[in-house]
Image (cartoon, rainbow, N blue to C red; front, side, top):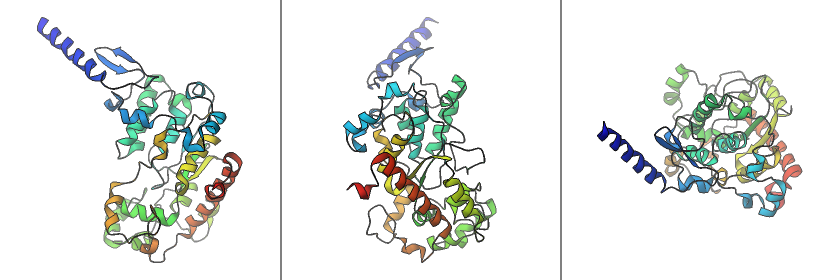
Length: 352
């Protein structure tokens, strides 16, 4: 018995010594939970929150300078500790496939910073894969312990690509040019959320090219369908204009708290933190698009070159145009530019 106790004490001592080598976020302290030393407030299922890595801490620091000057940022925001106690808007992240999973960082840091340390949010994103699923697990695990998810500020669903429902409000979303989204979806293992199992079994056989994939039933019109209550790859009739009309109606209805563009990523992140009430300054990690798939990077050696860095050469679509989603994107871009003029001094091209 004495030997066992001695071994346990030795193990605890080594754990504490190991953890002490990692610098903690200033707002986090170590507490003893049973026999194990853990960062304060770290109660989710994932042991990766123990300890906070230096990179996660660095990327979770405020990054006002990216939002057009630290003086302007400090003038427009409270500091992080004060803003955490202030009332914030309830939000629901609408995640269109291949439209920037990294935006989960912005949504989660706004809604959940009082319950989940920002360095842990960044750590979950850095691990890659389905970061929205990982974050949803952390939200639910801590919610069970506290009784509420993110103090009730984050509306579900959070993970996956769930369409807009009749009750959804406070929507926040990034939109992407349809042609670029289609190419990216093909490169990410034919990513088409909601595609029927029978169709998924045949799509790779019958749509071996990007152009064929874009023309496959159910693939086009993803953003319009999700806005109108359908799954991204639902095989619904788009020809009569009903889906598009409903999508545009939702976009213009005031149910969106924020609309951003992946092509204007940094400006969109800054706008998000300007528009939402009592938002803290952005984290440095929010300006890094961490959600790019490994498959997309592997494909760069066989895709035709592009004259614009970070933009796919759209000739691979062989003339295909997703007219329904193009109309949605045009309206989203119009709203984005209007909000930029109101909240942030104008679109990027007008500020240069």
